[in-house]
Image (cartoon, rainbow, N blue to C red; front, side, top):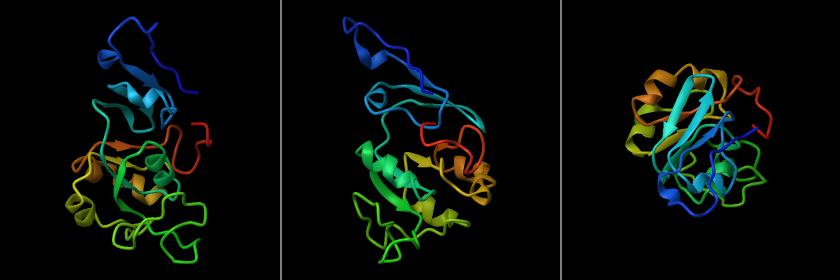
Length: 154
């Protein structure tokens, strides 16, 4: 369940901070920064709205799309007819963006994409093991409980 510090609308929301115990904030909450996440890898604060995003789980692109972020790197999905996008993709990604391996993403390719944040909430355990290396590139948002264990709400 996500929780946030809010206001009554009379204060400047640009300095209001949100906190969530889940790996992702709800729409509307994401407009107020900084946002602090309690995740399996510890507490992480996102200071400002990310623009360039790398997604490392099959459903992480859905979250980035819902937030209106530019996806600059993503895992390829074998579930869709094009071998790149899942059939549920609202915003299909080009093959040159969705070219990362879901179990062993190329760290050099991720760094070259110059992301503001890396979404790994739906990532495989092997990707979470790369947390230290990934966090040298950009802040990494990980699951709350563990790889592939969080509910859709979290």
